[in-house]
Image 1 (tube, rainbow, N blue to C red):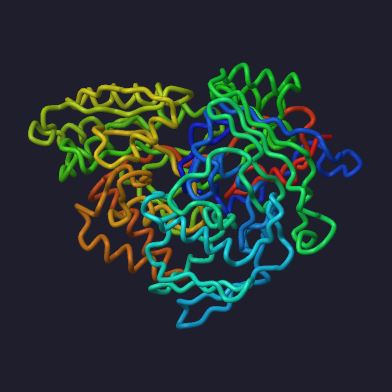
Image 2: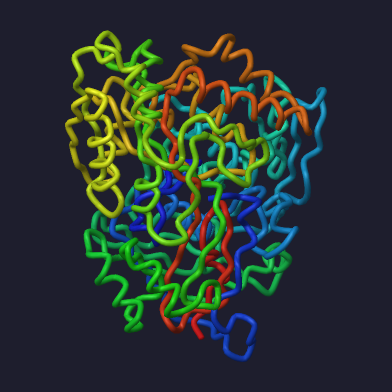
Length: 546
């Protein structure tokens, strides 16, 4: 939502995870969206991003901007509706005929798929296509990030052409929310179980499909010729499906140049230097059309690798790092209206967040940090920091380097392209001590932060999202507490997660959160019909050119 690894288009496509499905789903209406006479059908929606997609195979895709495309190309059984207001916070059927029939004490979900959906290659969508998505997600050779959401899956079976029965090992209050993620979109049964599909055309059953993907250069999505807005089962979804084509380019480009391209109407959605956010807000206003800011369930953090010698079983040094950081400076590197300083793992605005005031948000507390960073805790005093080389990446890394130097820790910064950095950090055994990561909620539940990112039982060889490699050391009965919170519901669930957030940050300090963020977007002068969905970002299926 990777709650995804955060990789926002507007913020240089540098950060997420994976996209706040409910509380940020409302969004605001863009220029001329209320003027129906100004809305046109057709045209090309031109997106500029500095970094490539991680994947366009729905089983592997996990960057925020990748999910933006998945929102336009993939057909899911359930989703958070692309509307404003309270309705955006209630899960609704997309390909399913209605909500599941739940039996077996809450562990079995029986779902019926609507008849009539077709893939871009003309094949009918059946229950088997959704089963294929689950089978790929759990295939160990594919190493899908979706596997971390399915540790409670017992079986998936088809029942005739349109019936799907999913059985869990235990009751899971967030299961329906989980399967709204693009990982579980319908895919052709010809998609291999153990290999990525990464060359266009990539058949899909949503309103658009990927016709071309030229890696590190560009991508093109065009209308699914079999998607018919004026008849069922398509009509009741109400997707406007306005533009004919969606292009993605600008990879490796300069953010200042991208901004100028949007202002010259050479592109429709652009990144911009974070230092220019205040200027853009003053020039266009906030949420008046061209410059949009939406609340997000997003946290940026500095992960400390709990499996490498420096920080392994070394809670005193990890706490020292959290006391030493200058969150005020780090947050400022994200620019105007980027978010609020935090020292907690659960973001502001998500159920289960309670202010605990564990570490200083005003600046470094070197006295406390030095009392913990004893010679024994420093273990030689050297650390390797994997950082990304654009936007806020270098200055945040340099700030951490300076802060930790004050407590006796020498930090070597290694800069990479964002995709490379995240891929390396997500590989278990990689020789780094610190990495810079963002997480954008996949769906609005605290389990999507705490369980997904801090449960060592989910670790695998590659594609890990738990890049602190934390398994619970320092918190008594950690896994039992995780399971208890996960199985609870209502106010009890939120209170248990608030306690977990406090305990893990105060006692184990496996990671150093510093900003709970927003999403900021700059549009070209002809873009209208703007609605933001926390899970997939800008709703491309409704975007229009005016």
